[in-house]
Length: 196
Length: 196
DNA sequence: GTGCACCAAGCAAGCGTTTGGTGACGGGAC
DNA sequence: GTCCCGTCACCAAACGCTTGCTTGGTGCAC
Image (cartoon, rainbow over the protein chains, first blue to last red):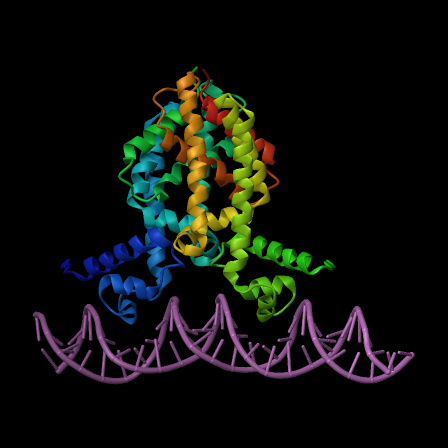
């Protein structure tokens, strides 16, 4: 079928196959035998390329968080206006999340499993930075008078991040495109559902 | 410690203990041995009260959905105004969800596992009714002119339900009370985050 | 003829579940 | 009052299966 040649390509191919399964069923619920089946090899042969199942998860999660944080950092570097910054964060997130559905499902389904292990300590670090970015922009928006002064920044962040990260775990449907979802989201976010 | 007496009380006690674990780790990630440990008995002894682990899950999930739907039905029976109806749905949901954290985690973590089995076919049925209730109220609100006419009812429902159901899975924290969360939510929902 | 990608087989540990047995308790018969 | 018997809640041990992972070997490429 697919004819990847170089060793690193073959390895990356396996990570993608595993990621597809993780995206559907989560990390723990996916077995190494299923991954091997998808690749057309036996489960034991996976260990020629990876030293453990966790290593595959590690590769997926760290790549995701680097990508997300890069988007966040760029968003706040480019824009002075907090409302624009938040819109930019939302748009960059949506693009990033679309490229890393596996990581998202893993974080949602297996957070307890990963976050407990020292190996995945970077998860908590990265989430802290993400939280801080949101809170900074929300607080700045309150000061400039663009956002409501009675906004609880941390609470709002938790709500918004969840709202933002959830649709990604929706099955990739023909019903809505990514742009539709992000537009619906931004509309909801800035204006609410009622007419002024 | 706790001295439940009657057989049905004892059974219910076990369901609660199991539910506490499911709420933290999900259904599949929780072992029958952990449930038994929490109850201070051996894992095999659980099968004197239940014929399978799934039966415990069944009991928790069906009780939850009955409770949710009862709240929804009452909300739309009592109120003619769609905006009030939605507010009522949100408030009733919050109360219900607080009482059924286990079911929520199970639906989020193990939806694929449950929804595939014939035994849990009622999950899909109930979710359909929940979706229809939301969509009906959103559409009515568009007709009365209270909600923006360009609202995609189904998309908005998916976003709103997820927003609403998520905070429940947050660890029961001292940071925010249930009322705080639901108020923040309604505020976000109706008015957005920007100042008019 | 050396290295690489993979197979065939199997390991220990953990899973949900089953089996046979044990002690405590309670209600009749005498 | 005591004896007996059944029921109840549970234990101790194991079953069959799946899990992630290991081991030793094989064929092909260069």
